[in-house]
Length: 219
Image (cartoon, rainbow, N blue to C red; front, side, top):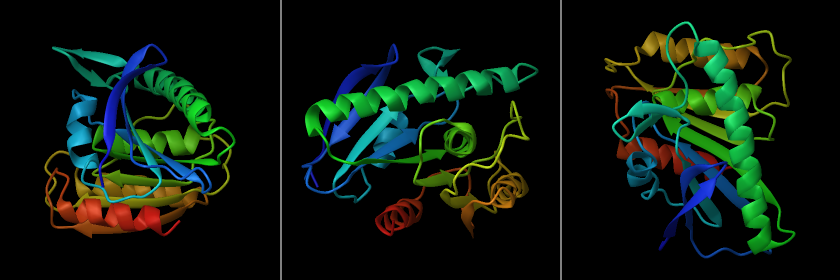
């Protein structure tokens, strides 16, 4: 499947958008991919380019927190984490809104469904936004993700979102108990969560990408 990628600006930041041949007579999926901490959109694009999905627009935004040396994160660690998580949520609200406006210019009245995925802090970003963001989300995939300290852990339960959480028993960066705790916490808020533990380390595997594609195709 040939995908044409271009750099665009969304909410004042760089994003990479990829489009295959789209059929506007059917719903179009917007798949937002979040890179890890101290990283770039290009790093997650390498893996996202291996996904097998039809009628999908792939969006890889750049994190708002400058980690130095041309690298970016989604929020800061430390005592300001809850505040910067809240800033992250507002940032992604604007990114998704801008992406929908961009696509509506191309696709007119076509229905656009938004799905999220990410790795490591990007997996955490997909979980956090689905929990607390303002835009409707259909499906979420977190690979080696976790939950940071949230700005409002008592926020009301939103419409149920369907999650796939994948984590590794040999992950030396995000221990399996942290990943499992995050997914169980999301399940406790009434969302539909499938949990898959694998023997992998802190990485994205070809099996992860197959599971991601199959999960999104089943929606």
